[in-house]
Length: 267
Image (cartoon, rainbow, N blue to C red; front, side, top):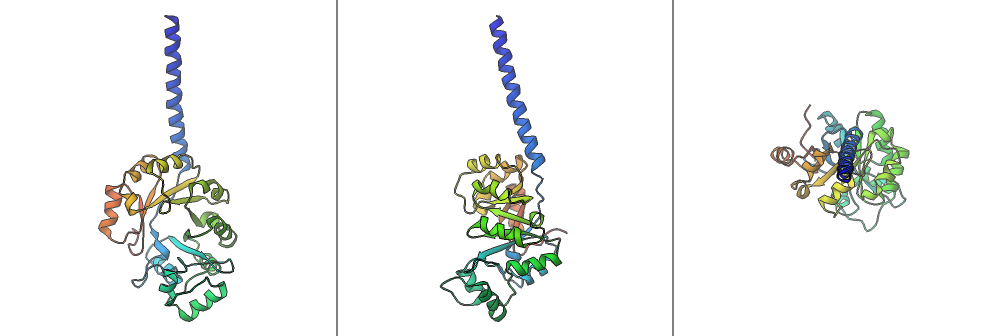
């Protein structure tokens, strides 16, 4: 009889410990993850019906429309600098009207922007000057290669980068490395991640900073956004340009906010 009482007591302690640990983990997660959510202008936002310009015209135009958060594409030049370009293939041709067999140097890119571009596309240096004049703007990075190297350049170049830049990461293994650079907030983007929703949920439990998760439309239609919401983790879907579609993802699927070219944020 006494042994049975001891067994019950030990079992009860174990149960209490598990409940307390679960509560502790979730409480800590909620306290740490105070990510500030707002609508994000994709590639600087659209302008004159054009997308992917990553230009100062787009940034300034969309600031007047109420945006504060701007995703910007960064690509490395031939000489290892960063320019605001989605890629050196289709995006380059769309921007300049012809193709290139190799990357350009920073000076070649700047010359081409002046001589052969409808829009004034930024470089990391010119973006730094714009951010000094627009301290309320927050930049979300999208880097197609060598993300950690690029983010080190971002930290070294852009003003108040730890607070005014939110890096997107592609590999969850890099979360702690990028956090150690000093960024206050991080977005994990899933468009290159092949893991399951269960794996996503397992990874986010390990993250220990303010962060959000962004995903393509297909994954946004799954149960993942609602499961993230239950864990106090905000989510985005990209890229949405119709009001009805935005409402569907946010109201039906549990997405918190969207990346968009043209749907202005609520003022």
